[in-house]
Length: 214
Image (cartoon, rainbow, N blue to C red; front, side, top):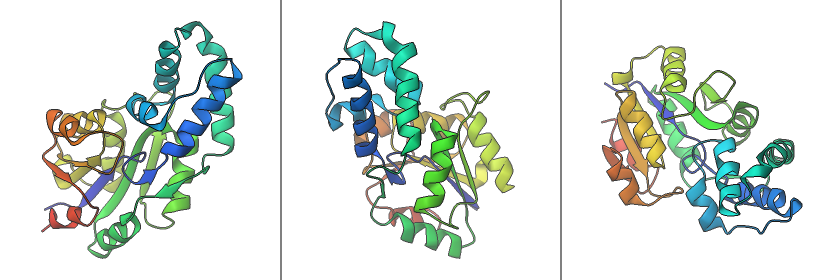
């Protein structure tokens, strides 16, 4: 019996693409580099802020600027993590249904903790039992350190959890943790990527997750 669901944040619960794109492009243009489309940013996100900026700079052959651009990006993004932020349609209702069923809910994200946790509590007040973004000493997903901390905090085993995300990294994370792993079609990546990286199920609307608990 499943007792908990651990979610990714960006592209899974929260539509953060516009905000991320805005601040990446502010960082690029501040250093004389051209901006990116949302579709390009979609491909680069998922492995944390450092990876995102490294990938962006590499596309400009400007990796030598990382030590300047990354602190600038984090400073402007952390000041306004709610820029153009919204929950995906049906997410809040799905979380309410999960809680009504007694299911515990956690969020683990490769986004820095100082932005991930406030976003969770702003969009879903009182609905998240445990929220963890990336911190010093916690490897990025698909390493299972963060999700292990989540299932331990919730008092459940991996076998009692469902892991939900929208990228190859998320599917790898769930499988590495020994969980039933669910990909979502409304996020940042294509359905094929989810299946190719070990998804047990792929859903097209948040309400479909409730069916997997029956």
